[in-house]
Length: 137
Image (cartoon, rainbow, N blue to C red; front, side):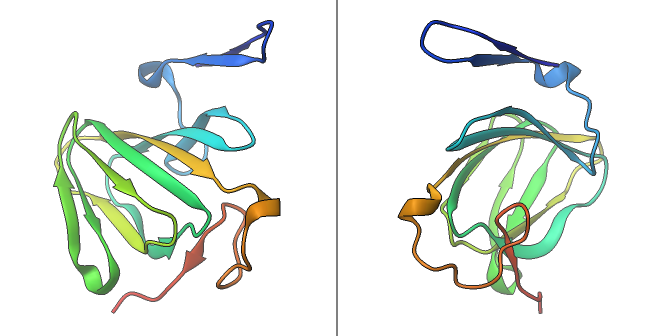
């Protein structure tokens, strides 16, 4: 459950990962601004198994529960992570991940976005989440 609170400077958000219900697929945004997003990911099985990149987003993933394997191009293992471990994925890096444990995978994804006015031309067509997909071997 996230709550946006007004402050003299700007609104801020307080969120609780444990009580966040994922309502779309396996992801739920709990905080968002023009340049940063915080997501909660929950996957009983699977994950994001299509190879993709976010060319204008850097992202830091942190595992809170379970185990995950992140893969890059050619299915090269980027990291196998457990609770309190994370991975930083710079924008433009192709990756996919899967739940590699036998319990629900719970992670946070904190990402920053390059403002549209500062972006170069996209290297392909972006979907609604700023992703470009590539076929896995």
